[in-house]
Amino acid sequence: MSDVEIKVPSLGESESEATLVSWLKHEGDTVAVDDVLAEIESDKITMEITALDAGVVKKIFRQADEVVEPGEVIALIDTAAKGTAADTAAAKAGRRPEVRAGEKPADEAETVQQKAEAAVEELPQQPEPAPMPEVIERSGLSERAEERVAMSGLRKRIATRLKDAQNTAAMLTTFNEVNMQQVIDLRVRYKDRFKEKYGVNLGFMSFFVKACAHAASRFPAVNAYIDGQEIVYHNYMDIGVAVSTDRGLVVPVLRDVGQLSFSGIEKGIVALAVKARDGGLVPDDLKGGTFSITNGGVFGSLLSTPILNPPQSAILGMHSIQKRPVAEDGHVVIRPMMYLALTYDHRLIDGREAVQFLVAVKEYLEQPGMALLEL
Image (cartoon, rainbow, N blue to C red):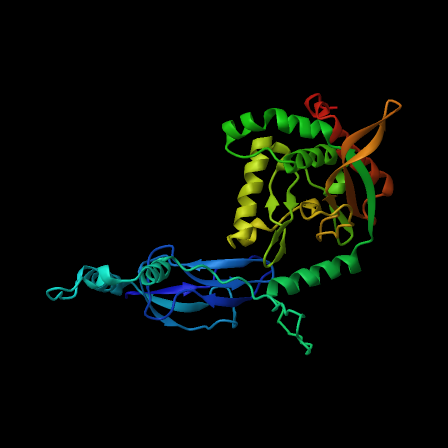
């Protein structure tokens, strides 16, 4: 039997279906191992389906925009045809047309545009971005227009989860501000040595991840959640780091942050961000977070109230760093300041605990030496 079945991969415990977004290969196309065949989108993530064997796409059973289930066969690859396909391609590449006296070979007579078009056709195909509503220039137009675009499965899931969080949790947000001077000075002083040794940049996020892990060890309710009539506490901390993609917001999880070094945190964050933006996240990357951090500051946000990521009980919001006048030792000085916001589930976390947790995060960032002394 030379036919290999292409099946929809597992989508995770809570996922029972997905939408087939697009086919990147079609019936009759030759494929190599690891070639991307199709793209599917579940309620949580977008995934690529790749070829495990080389051959020719023999049959496609499902079309774009159809709903598919985990384990369902959506295509067949004829692995016996791979030799024939390769031989045919080689023969075409090696065959040269007959050249008459006084004529140039056809490949030499190609125009620059033809060569460029041929080169583009040889590039590997990439998934098409999600359709965006057409922007209509108002200048010179007398007609008004609107366009309806179907919500993607991921966007619908985001909407449902956010609304569920509002309906279920007793959300409250507390605020504070942090002087980022110490963190900035450390980054400036050691960023080159850090990059040379570990191959990644020393970013702000690793300081915040460390600060939250440090504070959660003192206030464990922030790292817990409600399950029915019980409270579930953790002796570990898995932090979801919100990443914005062209398909919406996803929150991949960085595991055991309390055990990670700064370099381990930075490498983990970079790996998750790349996977999120390239559509390479798998269901396990999104499961099991106990706390979340979102950084609206990268988009210019000065202050916001984050929404919980159920069943988690708290989420920290980072914001833009701005130089502002502050009082130090009776003098007004200019310092790089950031507003912090902690949204928490008041059913589980008392206001005192939430405020003290945020103060602990602030103290860690303003005095990083406290962590070394385990204070």
